[in-house]
Image: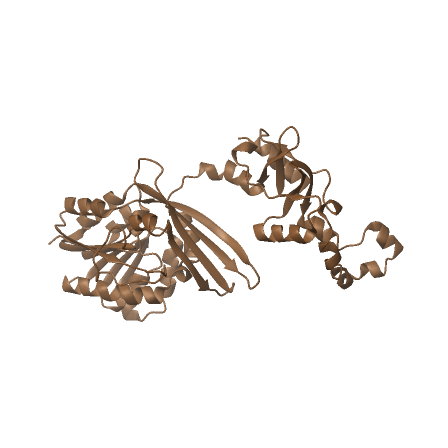
Length: 421
């Protein structure tokens, strides 16, 4: 691979007379450790955090002339005003290391290691700036591109660290459980399969209502979190729950008793872009003859036509950090396959500034009302009802499940209740 394969072409740079104050704003605002310095388009220098910090310390000549006062570290900080007013050409590295677009990727990486720097300007033969490349770009190019974008254990494990605080669970459970309980009791359900249970919030809530629940989740970390939370419950609730981790296809066969219902909450069925139909068919086979299946599916038509691809933007209080921000959006399918790419990003606020925690992608099945109706019909579920739930202007404003008619453009969620008997 070449540098041109992974470099960023949208490059922040400064001129020789840009002040250190403005450069510092750029470094803080972009979360980078340095920027190229240009005359016109030509790279003439590079300035880093270390270049700025080094100006607080005396030069060797200053130290020789006055070793006592130049060793006063508290006095050094008082130089901040003078340092911030300096132009870039006074503190920049005047012979920056650069690479060309056709430089081999790992050669660029070796240059970063040898020079002990984090970023390299990419220039043309006239030293005009055309891009920039960092260690992170190289890592993504060499390693990241070899990894498949998929619903993986790693994705769920990453999400599990923030899953509890990424959702207003108190509001969500208070709205969804009453409707679930009403449906399940009406159909005389006692035993439930909870497939894609996450950290077990619905599982525990249903067990409190007297149901026996076999709950399945791919992520071992999520199951571990669910079990940890279960320890706080009374023994009678604990006795009604069994958690399993692993692939759903194999996990559902572990149920120790025949169940009358299966629930797929929180868009869990979509997290199986290649196998969701097989999972529904397999689940239907292990259920009783007069079974009920419940699905909560993201209404993608609403996401793309009404929400401008955004499905979540929420702030939450934290413990280590004062606040967290959660952003979740979808990309439309860029192939013939009916899939959508979900991107989840998390930011942390330490009381002074926001910091980027991380971002993950996962490929989901793009399931419509017609899709789910067809697969359920093929499994013998002849009575299927569709409901819509809304979050309104607040994306995390959870709604009741089965009280409103589904509207293909307006409903935020497609909620499905299917009966076989």
